[in-house]
Length: 300
Image (cartoon, rainbow, N blue to C red):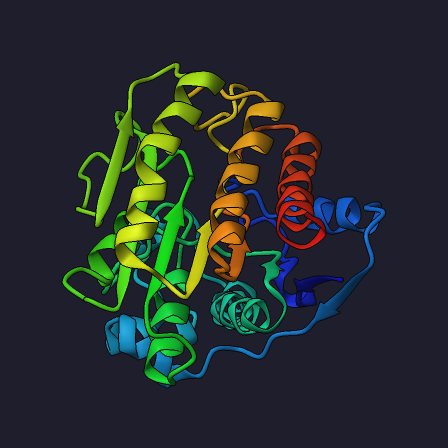
């Protein structure tokens, strides 16, 4: 059974700026509906305020919850934080946390939103309001659901917010494989960063992944993987600088899943980034990512 975490509040209208690819989430749900996989859907609760404030400045949390984010922070985020987007920002960390809880029970679960890896302590950035990965990891560890967590970030952009929010902790590690010259201009320091030159295709990308990720998993020995499965390393992505094909993305996801399965580590995924004028193929890539992870982890 494929366990999906989804809330109608994830499906917000596109913000006035037009930057955030809101419509891809509607198309993702339609693509998941077409999968010939038995699935059940779970509705998350908003993440309680105390857990948001455990990772983010309480003053910034208050701004988001009141939909009163200052203009300079909204510019950094990339869109105005309306009441609907404020609600979505609370729901997404709740969904990632619930996906992790279900993964610990069933081996794999997927949030249909999330992967907001650019959100920092006192501001959002790069279409990210709250950092659902860091918030979920912190709560899981604080409540004793996991002892060590590894966040595996395969988005084309470095997971700078996640790395900075979790820096220095011994109970959580961060891995980011990304385009070196892409956003953000100022990188944070993950537990392990794998910066890649522009234009890398499937073979070189998979070689870099294989040369770095397994050894880190064996060193950290996590009992949960949180996977940011951004599809923006694709060659056609508007904001990517790499050149993976659809098959390359599937091979990436299969490799990550197989590393978890061989070691008996549960995995929860978030969709992460994917950008372009035509949202349909992006949504299809996200759906295929979830399908690939499910088949590698549960049906193998």
